[in-house]
Amino acid sequence: MMIGTTSFALRYRYLDAATAPPLEDQLEHLRGLGVEAFQICENVRPREISQARWQTLLRRAQALDLRLSLGCMTMRPEELLWHLERASSLPSRNMRVIFELDKQGEPSRDQVMRLLDSIAPALQQLDMRLAIENHFDLSSRLLAEIISQYPPQSFGFCLDVANSLRKFESPETVFDLLENRALLYHFKDYRIEGSNVGFRVMGAPLGQGLLDLPGLLQRVRSCTPDPEIYVENWVPATEDTSNDAATDLQWLEIGIKAVREHALANVV
Image 1: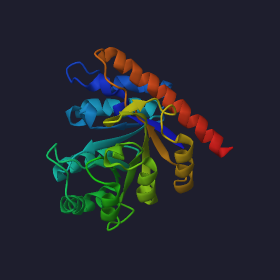
Image 2: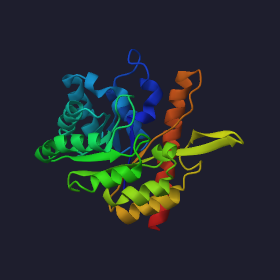
Image 3: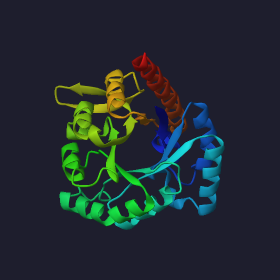
């Protein structure tokens, strides 16, 4: 099992591009927390990283034995192709993507299929696999129906245990529908606060909320021989961004320890 994190675990450090630190300067600290793999996602604006800085990032990650991968959120073929070409220089052959129409509503089945059809030749040429992440814009059932029409050597899933809660899909439902093509996993925890007139979902440190972490890890083990699990956070925002950034790292450390402890328990 490879335990990693994504750049969303550094959410508050990268809210403002003007004050965000160089991404390459974060790698050593992440490695010190026990991170083995790091997924660079859209929140750190990878298209704004110059080629020279990208090479620096790769060298530092290699020196730290930290496996890099890439992710994006788009429905535009040219944007997805750029990320695929950039990702093809990384050790991982998986690139994670979320389908979103730039805040313009939910993508349709036909739109998703046109995008997949357009990108399939590039995946084969670059020897890459698309790890499609479940999200609240599309139901997991619809994703499963669409992807079943495409070859598993090129198309699979990134299973996020909490992203589909807004679709009223539990983590177990997401696994039931998507685990047969799972390429990697995003783990985060949550609590539900409610009253007689409504409820809201709030983040929690991994292993301290409602997520059945031991049960889902057991499922991961049963369907993926050498899984990649990326720990993420939903740290509630306060008026102190510096404190929120520090909490991100605290929760990340808690989450990594929780995954490792439960994974070892499952092996025993």
